[in-house]
Image (cartoon, rainbow, N blue to C red; front, side, top):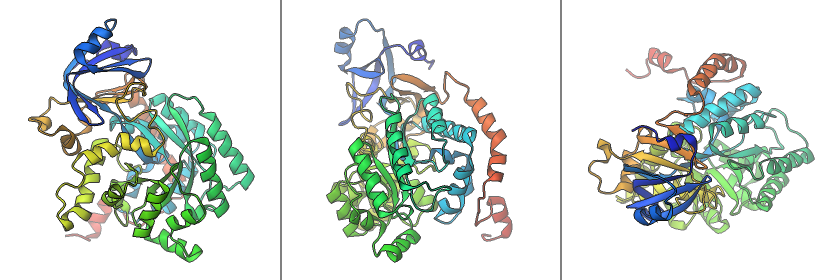
Length: 465
């Protein structure tokens, strides 16, 4: 199918797809109108067409119009070192990510951020929540990169006041910078601020409380990594007598504005802390498989009413494969042992990749659902594919059969960002050429420490015959 000219020109449009994915599931015979970057009218196709007769209808009977995916936890300035972490033991942030990000100059932050944004859009993500770059002073380059790519982004500012960053300013300077960060994106149509502490041990108790409170007062999310690895849990027990999540509760840093990344190693008591405080969780299934110690008990969280969304943790920017992994890990870790053949019934993972994800990152009033008044962040999925033929349960089929090559169009704020995988307004291949030319030196200059050899060397060692 050729890209409609009205898509390319950024015009107001009336789309009549074969199906529209609404909060209660996919429905046919609907039309969707986008005006000034927002969904302005949704309803029966004939009725909507008559009411919006100034717009020529774009008929797409073989397509699904659905909300864009939302990655509730990622690291946009780690894209230059993606496969360096393959086969590495769990706490790779200490040996790879902190050294790499801390060594990036402004240009490399921009290149990394734009490459990551392109990957996100290609994977169907219209929104990504960045946990905060460790590249000091270059957050503006990251914001510029994601804005240019057209990715809606939650930009975290790391506010650590203990070791863990290359330079730790004094307390007053950190809080002043946090206030400036909250103000700089006010009214921005695509960028939203957030405050972060990288891990609980990287901040004093007072800073954990102050930053969490500042975020709550500003109506934005506070992010931190918690209970991800056994080593971190044990360090917290030695230092404070409490596990990381327990310690956050102890200092008063939990709440409905808080987004906890991972929570893979949580006790029943800690699940109650999450539920009772209405703290949200980023469930990162691919990260658990690739380099984690455990799998977050997402089905238990759902049963307890704990809010969670799906995140990539910067592993693989593919919304469909993320949902598939989310279901598969719960089936492997919980479902098979207890005879739960449903494990979320398909719909749970679709919800937590879209509207449920918007809820945990504070954007329910902005995006995540095909609803009048919200930003027109959506995908057009080609259903005229063998994977969806015949179709009996489209929601579950999207979780198990969906692939990013089935995404024809990606829109944010009503603007076409990708058509069949590539941006129509800027040269993605030129960006990739720039990244290739600059990355070797950037990696060489970073004090990265790997534990395991790369795949070819690993094979030559002969561990597996």
